[in-house]
Length: 114
Image (cartoon, rainbow, N blue to C red; front, side, top):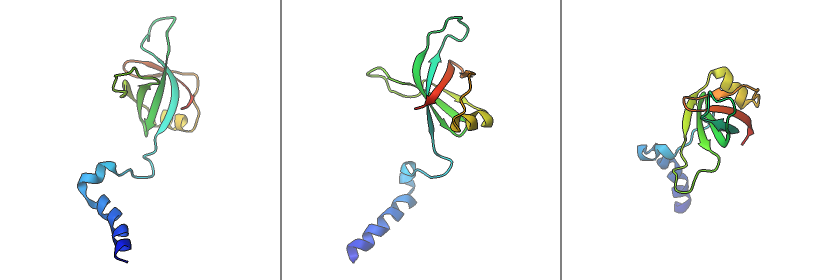
């Protein structure tokens, strides 16, 4: 009986300690949507060269990643963008449209779910 009481008390203590808060993942609106995209830095060029990427949405914040990061690279986000609530809702609902999203560095065309 002693062992089972420790088993149930352990998780409660884990989440009440401030040092472990970063490992806690709350449920609800914190879900992230990942989308397959094409992106280019050639915003004004008539014939653009596109690269494969991944766009991760969390609320109205988007982060752009290379689909296949080069070995030795950090694999972190290469750019970020802020979407309107309408744009974010459409993307999360699967309505991608033909328009490109624009971040500070890139044009981004959403292709579908990741």
